[in-house]
Length: 172
Image 1: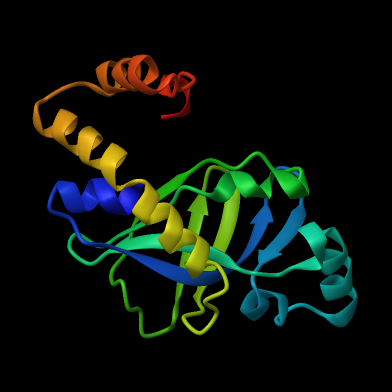
Image 2 (image 1 turned 60 degrees about the vertical axis):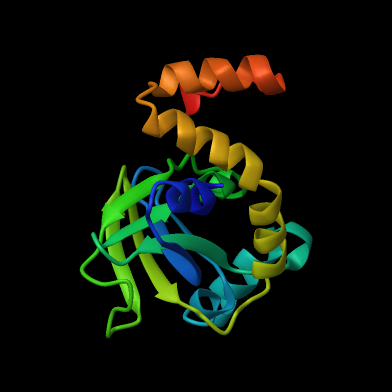
């Protein structure tokens, strides 16, 4: 949805397969998402983490990047709930959407994160692309509303009325 809204507003966001290795500073818990990050763990830690994965699948993670200005968006960090970690959606400035190191390091809201580009891991892209196509109409409507100067609250209320969605204003 974010890629389509962005396109509607003239921004070219790209879906990027990544692996993530992170640490929750509040709980001391380490987590990984994706084979590239999992491979950096010791065998014992790797097995413990693989045992916690849904259906044992280590599919990785997707983020969105924007070249100019350099931004990384990670709206899916809530999936860390499977680890008992209450993580927010992330928006951060980056120097480049194609870092020479192949990674982005971040500290955000009590999390220490390493995003490892994992372009060969395309396991999540088919579902992502299908969802992107399904969201075009709604994204166009949201883009029009934003260009018309409507507030997020007004857009959420309109979507709630039109599509009978639950309130989104609390998840901004």
